[in-house]
Image (cartoon, rainbow, N blue to C red; front, top):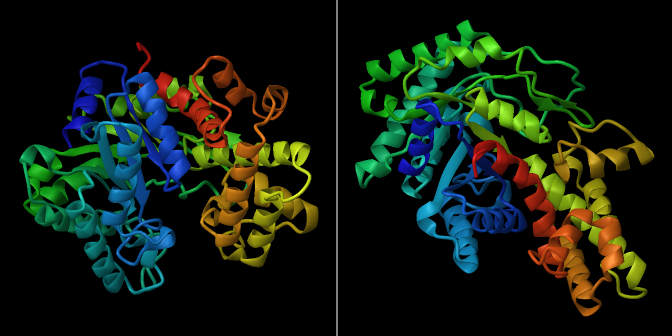
Length: 426
């Protein structure tokens, strides 16, 4: 995965550069990502799928790894984005989707998944074995986590066939924020200590070498730590460079490794830039872009209510009704009732609504919404009222009044901050 290795090498050589990792399986988010990259001539687009989204059982998207690759590449081809600038990654790859099983059974499932990801052409693999399985202690001992990561790396290496220049690169690390944001209220976070971060790296290095994975260790590009960034339902914990200064300095002398920062969603542009400067050179974003998608869809729903009298899609009402009828994807996260629950269902920063966009009733409502707004093009003042960022793109002739273009512009505004952080001299 030379595309990513080159960026990491430049960062380690002193350039203030990084890469944004977009973790989403929504087609409009992927379209917005490629559209944004084409506009800014981004050298590499990194799109990642999580083990819960995509696995050999279909995940919650219904896609296996080869399906996801075809899905992403299909959008890239349609938009004219060069496939040689596309990198695919697998996030949280380990037994996470099968923690209800005994550890050995879950690891066997994880081995199948890892091999499928590598054979499907995913070149960036996050080895995450940090979560306890049914017969594991909690928390899981760090050595057990590292041993399982090395075991999965062995599977990935054996599964790869092709040019050695295209061999997978790996991310390690145990201090992984909860995927999709915290489930509890947060005010502050404890930053990973430099000693703990370096001990994790050394433990993984020793186990990789012990298992004959010396070459693979040379392709470990990052470790995941907690830099002090997170979000819960309604608040964001912002990055404080002073609190992470010692951690930042600790990675500088470590050959070919940077930090990968998870849960950077909703950080300010200044905070994202500071993270890259401080060697958190891989910035992960997921709920942040689907939150922008939801903002745009709700705005279009409001425009529809202002302009269409009959035959409305009523997307917002349909989506809330479907979430209430099928609570499995939010029940353990949201605990309010009545109007307060409606607020969380729609506006929580953890954005659990993202799991519901493929629901057939919601898809039908969205299609009706789009058809209505194409048949009755919204007037500029309403676009300005409800979608000011997209309005700016329309006025700058970089977007149109088509509903998809308006959504793409809204998501693109979120991606702007990541682009600025990773390409400060552009």
